[in-house]
Amino acid sequence: MKHLWMVALLLCAAYALVGCGGDGNGNGVKTSSPTVSATFPANGATGVSLNTSISITFSEDMDETTLDSIYVSGMTIYRIEYDGALNKVTAYIDSLLEPETSYEVTVSSYCMDKQGENLAADHTFGFTTGVFGCDGLDDPFYSNKSIASAGEIVLNRRYKLLPSCGGAANMHYFKFTLDEATKITAYYKVVYADTSRLGWVTYFLRADGQDYAGQGAGPIVADRCEYQFARSFLPGTYYINTGETNYTGHTAVFEFLLATSEPCEDDMYEDNDFFDEATPVSEGDIFLRGCSLDKDFFSIDLSAGQTLVVTLDCSNPTTELHRIVGYNAVEQERGYYQGYANPSSITLTATASETHYVEVFWWNNDMTYSLNFNITGP
Image 1: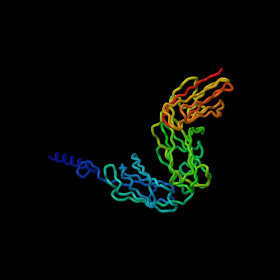
Image 2: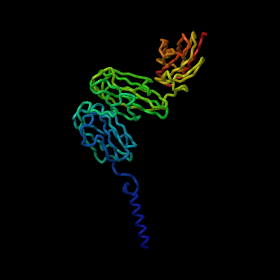
Image 3: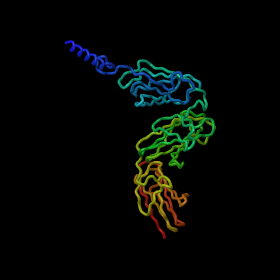
Image 4: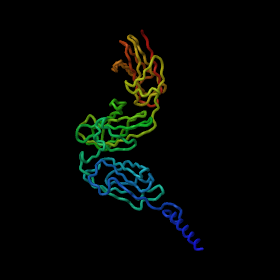
């Protein structure tokens, strides 16, 4: 009988242990409140960069819909992003922080974890910013002024970067690697500029510096400039060059994000985005697909005196659809240019036995078209 009582006591103890952390009735439901386990900046930090973002790490996986209850004294948070894998929220401020100023961050008790438990009380922490100037503005990629020193960008992560600080205009180089065909969209928001006449330019590049496509903006106004620039890529390593241009002697800070999405589907002749990748073709028709900002190059050999007529016919035409350009053997444009109409034709005449090139460029995604190459003459 004594042994039976011991077994019963052990079973009761085990049952009580299983109930630990539950709802008090042994039902295994968590009732402990989430807590703030880490912050950036840390509480009491000094000399904090004026273009910092605020991050808070929680002890539990949080309900993302409740995380808009985070406040920074005297500042406006315009974007909240949550990383569920790290239980970390990042708050992006809509402008630079003031130099040599103390700030208090409040994480409201309204913030709730996935089990419906709120913080037990508001959590507050504070920090003090540094001086204004290059030393008071952080940029982890500041030395990336060439392809050789390009900063490795983590896709789908935001950065606050410094394109220039009181001196000559600075261009930044970043690189990214894709394991599969992907559309890359570069998003920009200028959060500070000491001028309203700030020029901006962006290029997608390959490793030798030749650009796939570029886009410019300006003059722009800080706190009101947001734009995006996108292109589809095949697997590989690529570069992007971006920053202030045209206007020097200014300081500017911008928020930058390379976001991924489903790519535009191109055709079997890719990669043929440059002259040295041109697809060799002969007389007749080929049927193709084109993507926005994509250049497709084709090459064809002509004998002296032969004339080539290339006709582009798009099956889903739109306004401002395309351009088609003819080049001679040394890749110099000969003025044969047609655009916007459908169909479009160019005519090339060879003065010697030489290779000619045809470029097609698109402003729309998922364009289906044909090219007809017709040769006349000796």
